[in-house]
Image (cartoon, rainbow, N blue to C red; front, side, top):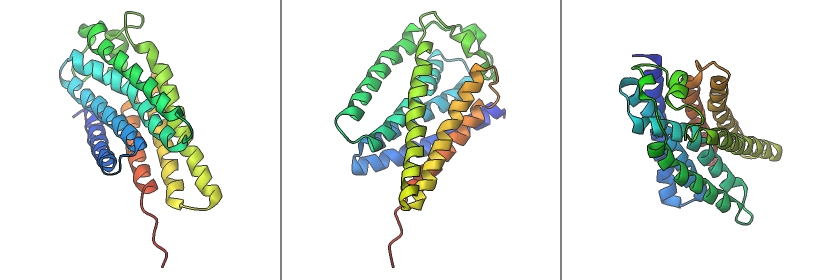
Length: 233
């Protein structure tokens, strides 16, 4: 089993469990931030599952989902969850979500049906980060120009919000679990972004491990930050 396949399988497993966990909490409590994070984790899972499929066989549908989920949707949906937690005044969070939904609805069919793919560039067990530019060249009716904007916005919201929350709880000397949990979420949000930056700089070697380590850290941080506070004796 290749490292790409193994890390993709583990990433799909962890992100799938995370998605089910947080969506179950949303079903019980109906909090907007939980739904946004749940959608983000479903995107994470779908992207990782698509990687698994694409290591074995070519599929235009799974390639489109791999790119649309991983490069366009994961970071902004996770960031949207953080925005709902931190921005309580007015309709700012709701308006940002409407804009995100508009981009999602516009780019999904564009990715699935309107983007030309060069399937001949695909090879079994080939690292997608090495060949995706050949499969989906820039400037030929693709959605690639959305990727930097969506990832930068989502990463700033997720990582920046987690750091701000950690510093706030630390300054108030309360809820130590939330301090550590938010630091883990911030670190987990940075790792996939770092992997994507290295791809643009010509070094894709950390991409799959960064995705796996990122979702593990975010999941651990979420569980720690949402753990009930111990009761006073």
